[in-house]
Image (cartoon, rainbow, N blue to C red; front, side, top):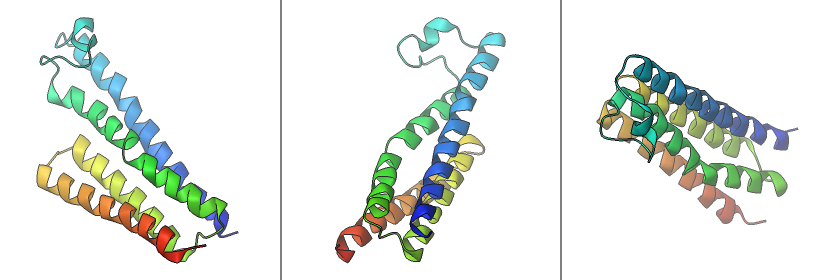
Length: 138
């Protein structure tokens, strides 16, 4: 059923979020074993001693728990009102792909212009989903 398909992009974004979350302790433990950081460097968040490659996964994880909440909400709104159509699904998958691309850029070569561009496009995609929901009416 077409309505149920809106749940898959939500699951994919949750999977991406959990995947990024795995990188937080991996990079922190690696830095700790290398003697670059200690427990006190994470006592109140992250101290200035924490290297960028260690703090980036945490920042990316926070990105994936902030604005994407509105993605989950609008997808659920489309689902419970049985108004998820092919255009909504296309936008939902586009949002997920853009967020995955944002995470990939952020956690690899971290070019700010590339990352910001993809982030902005993903935000406009999300805004468009909200506009579509309220423009269509019930």
